[in-house]
Image 1 (spheres, one colour):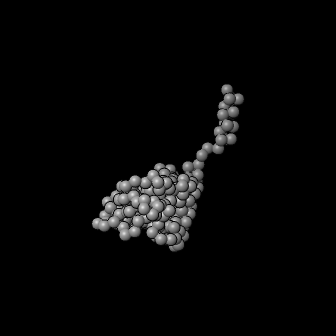
Image 2 (tube, one colour):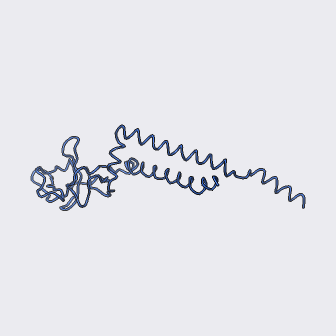
Image 3 (cartoon, helix red, strand yellow):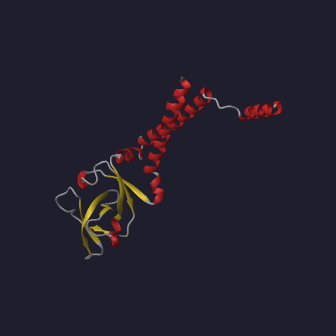
Length: 185
């Protein structure tokens, strides 16, 4: 009975947990290898298109190609970023963009310089930004490492138990038995 539980419940569940952990790791960290930056939407200014807590994947873009109605992620200062929609392209003091959040009644105060543009969002995943923000700094990072290690440990234990309760026939013994049958015939 325990052998069937291991084979049909614990093994698939452990594999699913490991696959989920690897997928989450790729979604949060691996995409940087593809040249995509991650940002979490922290305010409701872009609702209903981007909800608070959404994780957005931002791809670099040539500012000269941007147009009115495009959504951009840009630097407000050294550490703060925003994601808003372009409502006007300005050419007076170099290339600049007037932006506004979809949920805001008025445009942003200052235009955005082309040099401050990070890129445009290409994909967003609702609520994943909360988890991504949590695991990027201690203690969330430590918790994520511990959870991943625990999942790997569970997968190993399930594999060990599977080998104990569902032993595989020895290939050499099986080959010896088939040779005996051939010589007896």
